Structure formats: C-alpha cells, structure tokens
Length: 402
Image (cartoon, rainbow, N blue to C red; front, side, top):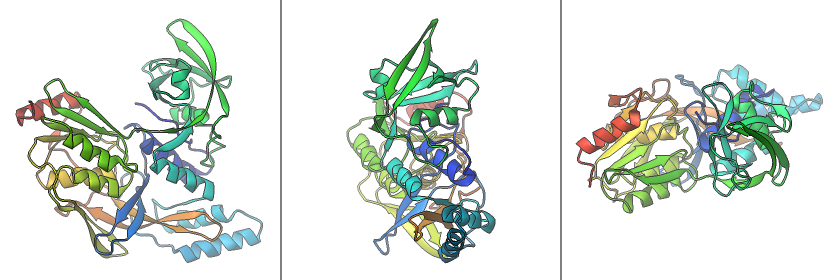
C-alpha cells in the first residue's frame, strides 16, 4: 500500500495524527492509511459555504461538548502562565469526549488548506513497505524532483540523509522526505535538499534532490480493454468534481468509478461528482447542531450508461457520501469491501491566537436515511480479492462495453 509524502505522527498526538491522515488522504491516498481532510459543505437553503471536516476511525461519534469560548479561555489562561495556548485548547478538546475534535496552530492549518488545494512540498514520490519488509518507491510524480533524478517505482529507499529507514514506519519515512519539523505539521521549504540512499537490483547509489512545491492529480482516467472507462478519484480536492464531470462527458461505454483509498476531501466536490451521474436530486442530508440540511446534485448528469463503483476500507467520508448517493438511488452497482464509516461533521472556529479548533457538530446520512458513521457502506457485491476484475465483469454484464 502506498503512502504519499505527509507529516508523521509525533509528539502532538491528536494534531500530529490528524495532519498525518489529512495528507495521507489528500496527497494520493492508500487504503493502508486513515485520513480526515476538511470537507466544505454548501447549504442549499442559505447558499453559504459551511466548512466541515472528515475525522478518524469509525465510531458513532458525538456532537462537541466544548465551545470555542471555552477553548479561548483555556488558551488565555495557559498563555498567562507562560504555556502554550494551543496545547491547552487541545487538552480541553481531548477531555470533552469529542473523539474527532482537534486544534491546529496557524502553520498546521495552512498546510491543511494547501492539501485541499492539492498542493504540497516534497520530492514527488510515494512509499510503501515491500513484501520483504523493506521500503520501496510506490509511485513517482512525473516532472517532480525524484523523477528528474531518475528515481523509479520499485526502487528501494535504504537511507534518508544518511539514516537507515528499513525498520521505520512508512509514515516516518515520508515525513523525512517532506522534512517535517518534529510533528508540528509543517514541512521543509521548497529548495531544501534531502539525500536519498537508493537500490535497484544489486545497484546501490545516493542522490541529493531538492524539495519543490508540487501539485497532485486527484482524478485520473484510463480506457479499459472492453471500451469502458475507469475514473480513479484519490481525493476530493478542489476541482475534482468538475474533472469527474469532464471525464464522463468525454468518454464512451460503461463507467467504472474507483473510490478505493479515497479518504474524502471537500463535500462540495463530491456533490459535484455526483452531478456527473445523477439528474439532480438528493445526495445526502446532514445536521449541524440538530438543524437538518441537504445536499443536491445539479441536473443534466449521465443517467443512462452502466456505472460500477469500487470501494474498500479506505473509502471515507466525502467518498462514502458519494457512494451512498449512487447506491441508494439505484444509479450504480457497488463492488469491493465495506467502507471506512466516517460520517461525522466538524466545523472550524478560529481562535484569537490564529489557531483553529475543529469540533464535531453533527452527522450526515445517505438519501435513504442510512447513517454512515461507525457503520460504513456494505457494497452490493463483496469482493475481498481481484475486486477490480470482478467490477469489470459486473460492468460488462450491465452492457458497459462498446
């Protein structure tokens, strides 16, 4: 399973883990890592944009029992004693029972927002643990520093800046690639150097590359052998919904939508993606502080061509919202394994010192009223192995060949 370049879990356990998982999902995703990037929800009734975020492992969750005002007071009291206000606010959230709540300092939240824009600083490669336990390159971003240095997928990463990484968790390896500053959530600046010790077969060598500001491609499209089209969405970063719509408009035959390992992202983008396959109508309902709201697809989507959706345990939040809409409304056959089960809603509140608290305020449901949080979505056809091949077979049976 691949792991992109994202900050490691470190001394700030809740915030460090949160940021780790944010980048795991947004920056190209694997089912091996959990993630909770922020979601943007636009209320159809008010027309205003509401910011909410994905959270962590499946649970029924609960609405926040702490207010931004309480966090402000805790931060102010801590600062008066010469302590960190952000850490004090995080401690209050931790004690509140809000399992998904977290507090980010200004720098951490900037990284968070850049991730949702599909931007990050790194060398442009993904890492995973090989079958023999060593760390190998899972993917190389075209045109990135690693690619320009001749690094290829399958190469082994032996050392980073002279330190052996074979026994290190993948999260720590990618953290070193990004130049994470001790788990605070920010990476090294573009232009900073990192030396990779690599191996390909029996050939071992070192190469120094310079980190760069990179962007990720959240939506990729490829033709299948039978004339159908696969649309792979790794995260719902900004613009992903429109790219899905473009892919549907410019393709022929059946459609295979691959949401495996998609840790979520912007709910508005997932709703826009739903509009590619639905002719308007309900996508999901959600509540904020007990007030019910709804998300609707735009009209004019392709409702005729066969559609199969691939999901797995790494399909989370906004990706589950889309899956639930297509399944409940009978638009798609879903194939794979049960999804992650993250359906709680967080909203951010900016504190006086510039830090941001994300507190749980509600949950969302599928069009049929099913709760996702703590339960996930069970696919129509459970496939624990060769899921993609089985999905293609289902699509062919639906008449999805040209």
